[in-house]
Amino acid sequence: MRDVRRANRAVLLTHLYRSGPLSRHELAQSTALSQASVSNLIGEMIGEGLVEEAGFVESDGGRPRVLLRVAPGYGYVVGADVGETRVQVELFDLSMAPLAKAEYPLSSTTPKPDEVLDRLLDGLGSVVDRAGVDPATVLGLGVAVSGVVERTRDAVVHAQTLGWEGVPLGAMLRRDTDIPVLVDNGAKTLGQAELWFGAGRGSRHVVVALVGSGVGASVVADGASYRGSHSSAGEWGHTTIAYDGCACRCGAHGCLEAYVGAEGILERYRQANRGRPAPGADEESALAAVIAAAPTSKTAAKVLDDTAGYLGAGLGTLVNLFNPERIVLGGWAGLALGGAMLPAIREATARHALRQPYAQATIELCELGPDAVAMGAATLPVAELLSDGGIARAAALAGAGGGAGRAACPTPARAR
Image 1 (cartoon, rainbow, N blue to C red):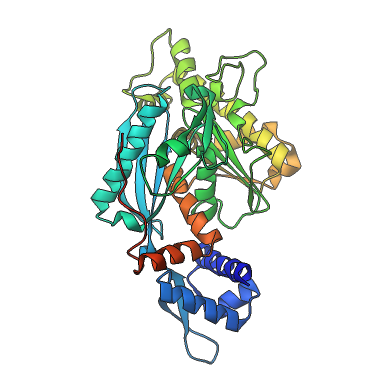
Image 2: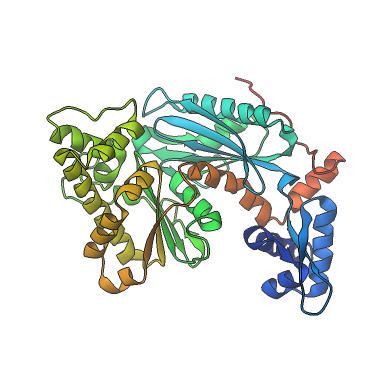
C-alpha cells in the first residue's frame, strides 16, 4: 500500500509540475485516479506545503474549481554547468525562476578535477548566500559535465576531451557538502530542460543538439530519454563525418565536433585567414566576430557556409537514425549559428536526410537560451522529488520537526 501511495503521489505531482496549474477534476481525468484518491493525496501534499492553491477556473454550471500547483517556495534547486572555459552555478525555486547566479573561469580547457570541484563548491555557497535562502531548503545540486557519466552514486565521469578518466565527481562533491548531489551529461540536462519547459515541450520524439566548444545530443524516444546500455548514448559529436579528417579533441580524426564545435570552426577560420585568428578574448566573442564579418568577408562567409553544410549533414544523420518530430538546436554556439543562418542549416539538413523523415521533422532553436544547461542540471533534483512523490522530503521534514523551511540538511561544508 505504501508503494501504491508513493506511485500515485508521483503521478499527481508530475502532472501538476509539468502541466499545472490544474484542478482536482482535471487531475482525476488525466491520471485515471479516482476523485477520492486525488482529493486525499492532494490534501496530504497541501498539508506538507508541497502543493498550493493557484487561483480558480470556471466550471460548467457549478462552482469555480480551485487550481493547484507545486509550491515554488517549497524548496530550491541548484544547477551547475561545467563548460570548457567556465563553471556556471545558478539557484532556482521550484517554478525554475532564477534567483542567483555565479560564474568562475577555468584556467585551462582541460581543467583538473580539483579545480572544478573548488569552483562548484564556491558557486554553491555563493548562490545560496546571495539569494538569502536557508541551505536546509536546498533540495539538491545538479551538475552537468561533458563526457560519459556513470549513473551510480559516485557519478564517475569519463571525459576524454577534458582528460578525465574515471573521475568520481559525485563522491568528491559529497565529501564537502551534505546537500544531495546528482551529475549528468550536459547535453542530456539541456534536453531535459527543453523537453520540460522549452522548444521540445509537447513532443514525444525529440533530439536536442548541443553545440558549444563540444558537441553532443540528447535523444528522447516516446517521451523517455534514450541513454544506451551504460548512459553514453548521444555522443553525436564523435560520429565520423570525414574519414581521416581533422583531428578531434577526443583523439580521433574526422569527428563532427572537429568541424562544427566552436574550437573547430575558429581553427578552420584561422587556417583560411592565413594563420590570423578571429579577434576576441574568448571563443564566444571570436565566433561572434566571424559571424559579424560574414557579410563583408569572403573568408568568414566561406567558413560559415561550410559549417552550415557540416551541421546539416550531422542533423540529417539524426533525422535518419531517430525519425524525430523535432530537432532543437542549442548550446551557445548552436544558438549563435542558428540565429545567423538557420534557413541554411535546414536546407543542408534536407540535402542529407531522407525525404520522408525530414518532412516529418522540424528544426527549431533552443528557447531557454545559453543558460539552459544549468537549468537542466537543476531539474535533476526536481526529477528526484517528482519520482518519489515528495515522500522522502516530507519524511525528512517530519523528522526535523518542522515545516517546509527546515530539514536535516545543514549548510554546505568546506572541509578542504
